[in-house]
View 1 (cartoon, one colour):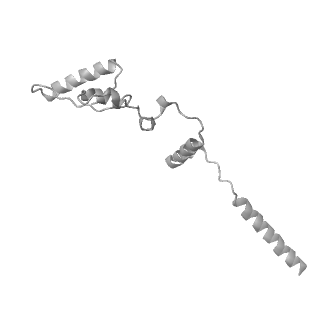
View 2 (cartoon, one colour; view 1 turned 180 degrees about the vertical axis):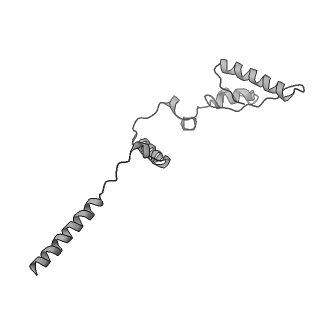
View 3 (cartoon, one colour; view 1 turned 135 degrees about the horizontal axis):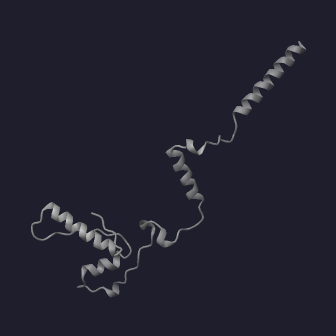
Length: 129
């Protein structure tokens, strides 16, 4: 009877030890090559949460930058709408629409817009069509 009790006790100890070793509190470390897109996104978000360095104002995305203060005393009721836009959109991306006079073909319009785009780019203004 004592042998039987010792055998059962040893079996229980072995089973508990095996179960405890397979069930650990720490997640397994994955190889970086095995990371999925979701894992990388989770890792990036964790880094961003723990990041204590604040970006300089000029490196922040445009929607997170503070808006420039508009001095309304400089604006007249009859002021040029372009001047108002210059003051309110300073440092931000704006959309511009143009019309070509005459009746050019599509190829001529593309050539003219490419010329203007190149000229603006040479003046450090990024323009996209």
